[in-house]
Amino acid sequence: MFFIKQLLSETDLLDGQSAAHSIACISTSRPIYLVFDQESDYPIYVIRKLDDLSSLHSQKIHGRLYRLTGNLVPEPVGVYEHAGEIYDIQRGVKGAPWFQLKSKVRTEEARIYLENRMWETLRNFQTTICPANANEARNLKPHEELHKAYSAYRDTGNTPSANLAKIVDEAFNDLSSEPDTPAVPQHGDFCLNNLIIDTDHITVIDFEDFSITSMPLYDHFTLALSLPSCGDEPVNAANVFNLSAIVDAGQTLGIPEKVIRWHFLHHLLLRLGPWSTGEKRKPYRAWLKRVLDLFLAE
Image (cartoon, rainbow, N blue to C red; front, side, top):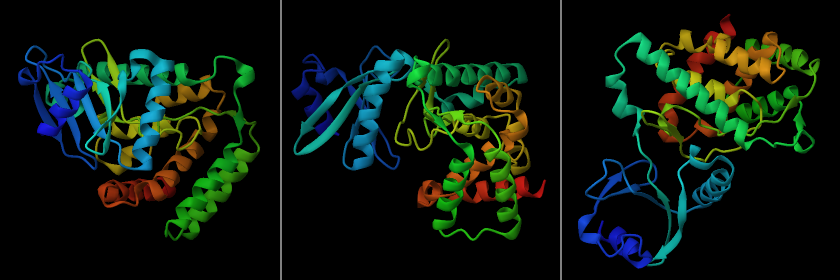
């Protein structure tokens, strides 16, 4: 990974001390390079290659979000070219990802405390990215959003059962009789894996799916399905729309409790559309299908 040190040396971001820094690589769908110095237990820089339209979109969204939210997201440093490749560099943040922390959450009290902090982070994130001026905000029609998600679900190759078609019709009719709802930009994948958790602060990362929808509560369901309290049992996941944190959020947004379950149906259909067709999400897609089946059976 000498090329990363060369890149940083060319940008003067290492202050001429490249020998005192180490680099680690996280192998995901796109390699992520973490740059450490000798004094910090968290990376001072995080580097990603910008090699397709998705990564370029994510980088631009990240910059806009930082201007709106401040330290709720990592600070962008800049975009740099090295050896014909383009790289996005951002400052590392203090804290650790969930997979490094979960073994330390050993009591029910600790779990509840941590989950409450995550709900608070989601509230703060969405509050800061929504238009401050009510006149600038737009509304959307939930039944139309449901119809679009259902169409994308079918277009992906899913064959709806007669029961699903019937319930979608019921949901469409219920939602069409409700007033328009505020459009709320959604992170798109606000889950445990995209939170860096420190003692007194949580940072939100990964904006590749930002604005996949503006249907309110989408991020709430994503977070709920990833929480330890949900677990791996689909039967528990199929009922997350009853969680008090989601009901309370719906009330704040003017969404009646009786139709929150239809927002959850929209969430499941959208996640089971093109979003989850890749090999990387194949296991999660299979799990979501079981959740949908249980939701329909109730």
